[in-house]
Length: 304
Image (tube, rainbow, N blue to C red; front, side):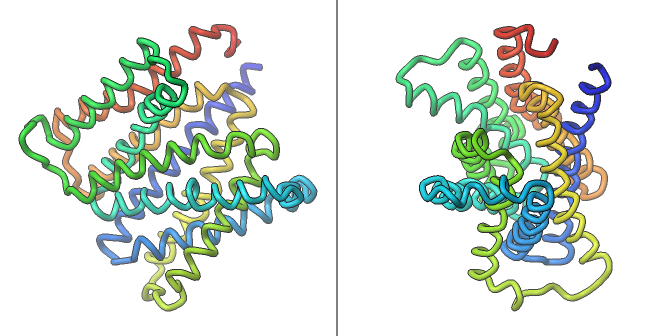
């Protein structure tokens, strides 16, 4: 039992770690190689979608195709592919291109606060005190992150900030929209097909064959890492971890994504992070820990 839980923890750490490395490499591709974010998003979703669908077909062909046998569910999948999957991928890479990977990844973690506000409005119920605390932490953290503690000045690119907020909103949709589909069909078919649908649509719209970056081993090796390890394997590792540990634990370990992205961007890309930025990042990421702690204390036997 202990070994099983440790395996789940390792997988839940490895997936976000690969996401963080992937985001840092993407910033390198945008700034140094001048690869278009539209092109990278298209290729990332297309290739990863193909590989994940093949993976699902080999594992269980009937389960992989089941969603297409129900017309309503197929339409829900297509809707999620654009509004959830493609939107979250696109806004994240645009936030990196317009700002940097560290702030983009941290702002993405505003998603729990947005979900709290949405659910409060939808259910017309005032949120719990722990939820109010999470929202306050997220707001204060965002203010510190984008102003460096100088409240009258926006010290990060406006585009980076707005795309970062868009990433948080799209991440919220990515979390809320597919819950029914994931429960009914499983994660591999839904993630694989939604990536493939989004990848095909983006590829056709942006005509990726007309915008291929010049060949070099560095360029295509970096692109290969983003597509294979930073997308397909990262998703598989994180989703597989849910077989062994609770989602609350996995969500906390998801903080390895911004932590790794921030560390790597400071070391390799020269991104500066002062004390106010650090406090802001801790406050934002702390909302995940607060929510996980609240979930655990509500059901203290869930991890035993």
